[in-house]
Length: 191
Picture 1 (cartoon, rainbow, N blue to C red):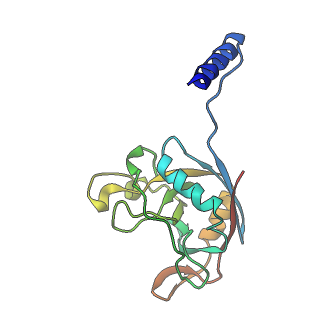
Picture 2 (picture 1 turned 90 degrees about the vertical axis):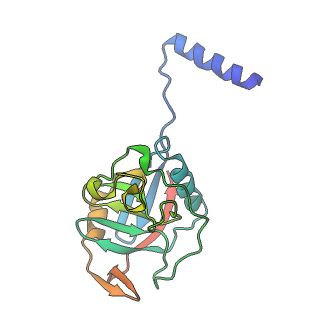
Picture 3 (picture 1 turned 135 degrees about the vertical axis):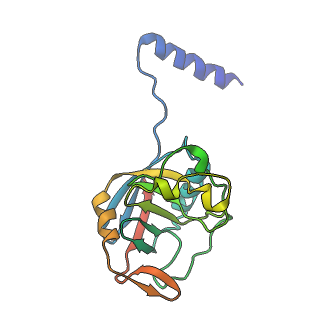
């Protein structure tokens, strides 16, 4: 179409002038929790399906009022799918697992939570509080080895992540590692 040619011409003209032409920046979201704010860069080129899915939930306000329902010290904090009474919210259909993208589950990364079924992730995510590459990265095609898709990284607020990771937990209603004092996700908004 004519507009593609026009865009190419404009970019070429800017390049001739010596102005830097930068790639589009990754989207950033701010998660407001009951313990503070966490800023997250979403890795759109590494995990496009997961980022699109996460942003659809964010834009719908889905995460407002959900909780971090699973906290395991020296491992991760998980949330994004349950209300304070631990009832699950209704989600969209599961998405394809992108764990083969080569991005490692390092401290401060955001990854899609899933069941033992490889392509079962919906709304829930977790933030690694330590480097979890050995246990959570893609190692093979069997479900236990397939890994968890990293689709973002914390750029500000790891102190808040660490504060959440340090809360006291207890078994509750068939769930393990539930915070005694509820940690609420008040909102997640695109910055």
